[in-house]
Figure 1 (cartoon, rainbow, N blue to C red):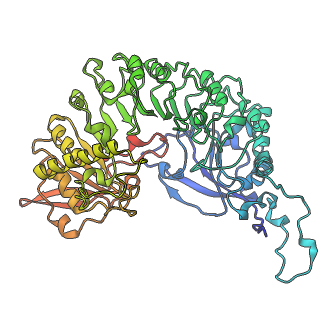
Figure 2: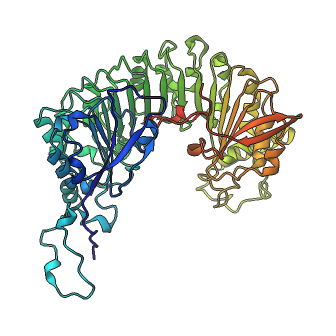
Figure 3: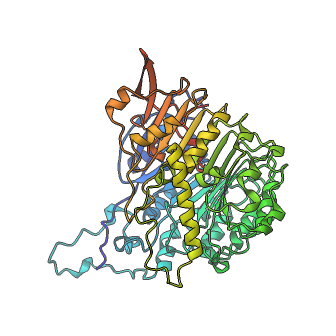
Length: 601
């Protein structure tokens, strides 16, 4: 039996700032509980720019820095130069929110809408929530246990399918979009996001897209995610986006879908500066997203992050070559490279302004190898490099960017950075020697490779990744920060996770640092990292004189004071002392890998 959530009247929490005066270094912001009693104090939105940053059921008043006033989940590019941004965190409360907004009037002041995604069939508890009353005063009291009173039974028919529920849920959103445009207003910022679109269910009706596209000419930031196979049902809008600067598209669940709706947005957004596009990384033709041509040019684009299967290496590589101002590139477009890709290799004169490069470890194509990005004739002055350890191990020319490289991040799992353990049955006969299903040639190659690694490890105690790192570090004379992913959570050995990163791994990494390095910060992270023992922190191993900071812990919480240590030198000893982060990640930056560093400059 479906359970109905008690009906409550949604409340708005407002962040109110007077932007007519300059903001001090640590400006104050005040959170008020918006209700009808406060309405008299805010007679007209036009008298004071207001940001509606949260929709919830709590009431509080707070004072904090202007940056802290914005919630952590605020998406990038939030517009604070005036107007109102409505953040809908609970989509089933949208009708109540709409009623409150319409009662206030001044719809022209609304310049942004942020919606946290909702899956109509996420759980049974929310299945009939669309029928909850938006006003607590009108809510029917809950029926007592054992009551025979049938007057409390719902009288409205409830939506029974995913699409029915979705239509019911977003009717208020459509009404709001239409009301804003009809009043003469228009949005600059629209986002519909959720934490994951994987295996999600939902289809937004054509009327939603029609209402949204009425704002196309003024939108500056657009962030959209698509439910599983929803994109296939979305028709191209055939509208122009002349003001669009930031575009974030998550089509990672569009396996085999027609991507014409996304293609239309790309082709009609000539002034894009930031683009993030995620789509399926499937090599099967029927599983690839369809009708993405890469036949467009964004002359002002400076930041690009793309992830998916490289179904047309020539087109995508040519697209990159038409981006002369590109400074930040996350190239997650991968494939099983072949000889044909050699014909469309990345040219040396492409992306001359590139400063930060993230190259995926997932089968980079032959036309865009790390060697191609770092080639000497290209003269790309890359300062920040994030690369998978397998690509890094095979690259001999990282020293080509030694004069510019300041931040180096290496991606991997814990076993990539540890010598391979000897197997007692490596040379024993196998029961499947005569099994025709076994590729004996491949098995022999793998066995020979393991033997090679063990022989090298016996000589120097290192593995391929640590050996490559030891060889390249002395050449990187301007390197200031080194980050190494040693995650033990996403790898299994004998059906269990290997031991987490610990003090022994720290000792290994410290042993690789050359004495004459200019390195100032070392960042080691593992989602299951073992805490460093206090006696080690109090009497830290000898380190290069330039090393000032150690970050130890998880990737996304490196700025926690408990995970960042300052290395203090006194009386010939080194002590690791917990310290405050040197910088905070910018919550408004969505392509955030360049923000996870320790050093401020």
